[in-house]
Image (tube, rainbow, N blue to C red):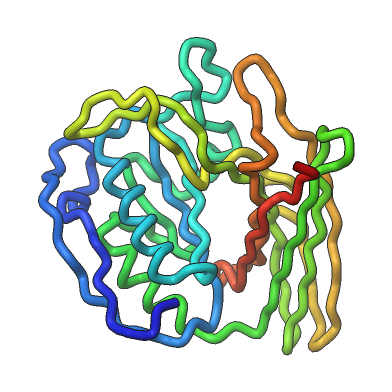
Length: 267
C-alpha cells in the first residue's frame, strides 16, 4: 500500500443504486495512508449487461493499485444483468453459486459491493472509504494459500494454512477466480464491447458455499487441503495460467482474514 496521500479515481455516477440512469462524471476522493492490518475482501456484484458496471471495474483497478495485496476483489456476476456460464450464444460469466451469494445479500441493483462480508451491500462510490476503515482493523488471524496445477493439467491442488494468536472460530471458504477473460460487456458510453477484458471473475466454490467450519486455538496452526477439476466444457473453459485461488475465514463478525494465490502451472 502506498505511504503518501493518494487520489483514487471514482465514478460519481455510481452514487445511485440502479444500473440505469447513472451519470458518468468522474471525481477524486482523497484517501489518507494507513497501516494495513488485514487483507480486505471486496465482493463486486456485477453483470455483463450492466452498462454502469465497467465504471465499478475501473474503481476496483484504482483501489488495487492503492492497496496492492491487501485488497482482494472478486467480481461475482449475478442478477438480471448476468449471462449464465451455460449460455451457448455468448460467453457467460454468471455461476449458480455466485447467484446464491447474490440472493443471500438480497442484491437487486448493480453494481454493488460487499466489504468483508458485512451488510448492507454498498454502491461503488462508498468502496474507498469502507475499505480504508476496514483495512485498519486488527485481526489475530493469518491465512496463507498455495495452489498448483497437476501434471496432467486437469486438477488444481490447494493448500490453505491458518494460524491465530487467539482462539477463533469461523468457516474457511475457498474460491476459484479467473482474470483476462475476453467476453462481451455492455458499457454506458461505448455500447457493447465484444472484446472486453474481465478480471477477478468468480468461477467456482472449491468447498461449498459456506466452506468448512474451523476452530483455531491460540498459536496452533492448521492446514487444509483441497482439489478441484479444471473446467473444460463447451461453454466454459478455464485458462489455468489466469486462475487464482482466494481463501478466507468468515464468522458472524464478517471476514476475519483473506488470502490469494495464483495457480502455479508448468508453463
